[in-house]
Image (tube, rainbow, N blue to C red):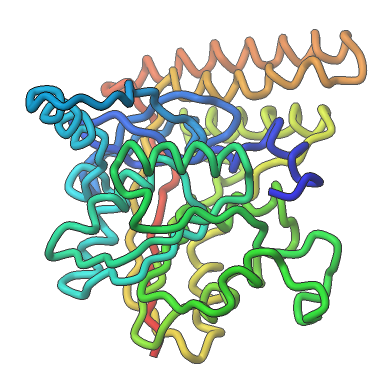
Length: 360
């Protein structure tokens, strides 16, 4: 990512997500200010909400040995790193939409180690991926993704590119004298499949007010007959009925802390906004929209409360931090009481989505 953006990543690393995970595996995804693991469930029943991050990566011993047993062990370890569609609701949804159509030349428009672990499985038949390009706006993230690609054994089968989708120093995206770094690097390439995995919501941290320009930019990079998959989080309402309202209150206070610290809040866009943007593209045909309800446990709510607490050192006065700390302490108590009243220990509110479209 350009140097002007690095300050964003000190507090906003491709922001907080809700992500769906598996019954069997623990994995990572984009998130807000935390570096935890999450669990995904098979679609479309249970979804785990957890502040996690695609910037998290696992350390594995990367030693070579001539012995058959060691080679087998390395291969087995690598295989365990893969994230399969059958174990991940969002990626599984994309695989079902793709059907028998090969993934071909694939662009991951906002990559991370979790999505890369899924992409690594797409080389297998019959998924038919021939090459991948993984895009990130952060130099550290590029290094992490390259290391992950090496561990997965796919480093030489694709490219990891660093760059911003938009020129931060120029508001006129049509001015060819100031092309964005990615537009320049990708200008001669068209893709069979493009994945935008929570990319739109993350943009406010590095390209604010340009979300409406992102989908047209991706459409230009898509081959006729190619598929675009956009995953996102439906924004939470201002209020909700019953115990679910605690989720709304936590989000409001958390965001207040972020603003008081002088930082930018995460901004996700609703599924209907995504669909409207796609419908404005004459060359695109909407195929399907899938939604995945979100379940909150007390622990995941507390992680969002802790995001607010992490901002206290940036407040103008210690007194302000002390008083806000009391508010967050009270919300944590309310969260515990609300989840304890639920027979499942969980509160349902909102959903993740995947929108699929094809270029005519």
